[in-house]
Image 1 (tube, helix red, strand yellow):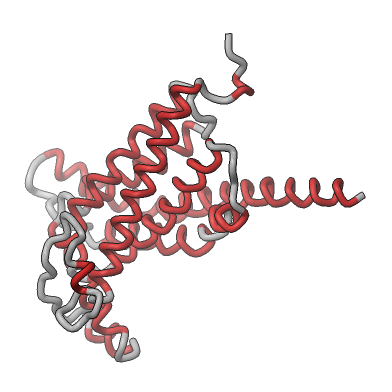
Image 2 (cartoon, rainbow, N blue to C red):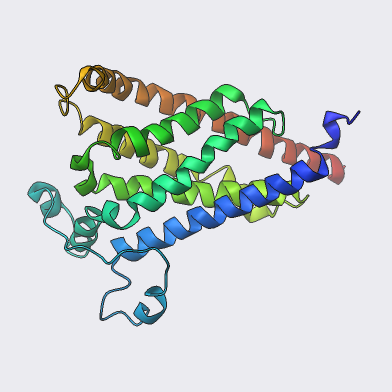
Length: 262
């Protein structure tokens, strides 16, 4: 019988490495597509257009329209076009984001099978909240498709996941590059608040919509304000978990370095 401390079975390990590498590639694709769209990197005048036009499954950009006038007036002139294009990000990356994010459901199965040691509750909350956003909010309410917070949500997710999945793949291969380790346990200070606040405010934008379509829609209409309210303490819980993990990782590394220097 294999000892759990020996790590996963070689076949399971190979599968997990492949899963994490493919996930990192998927989120890298979404990160690239979203940045290309928001910053108009594939416009007709862009010198990068010949290369960026080859990105597969990236629909043509749709015309951007003005957003909140007060918000635009508060921004520097160079940021206004990016804000307007962020409002059309769903048209270009919405379907791809839902597809890539849905594969994360396998992570719950990985925990249940004992292939990874992540906490089941934490993993379940993270996966369920993401799936709810892509299928239960943006997938159900077209009103969210023109909200620029969709772009900030996807960018926050993508940056987080590119680092996380790459880190996991390297860890399984027995190598943890120091810069990647630092990013894994530091970026969340910025990306968790930007991602979670974008999620919550997108949810808030749907409150009062679709309440009379059916009994299920009415129930969903009552649930969304509750979820919006608990999203903020949920952000605190998830951030506190990562801060604890960060202290454990870097605190342990500091103790090892001190021991070696003595």
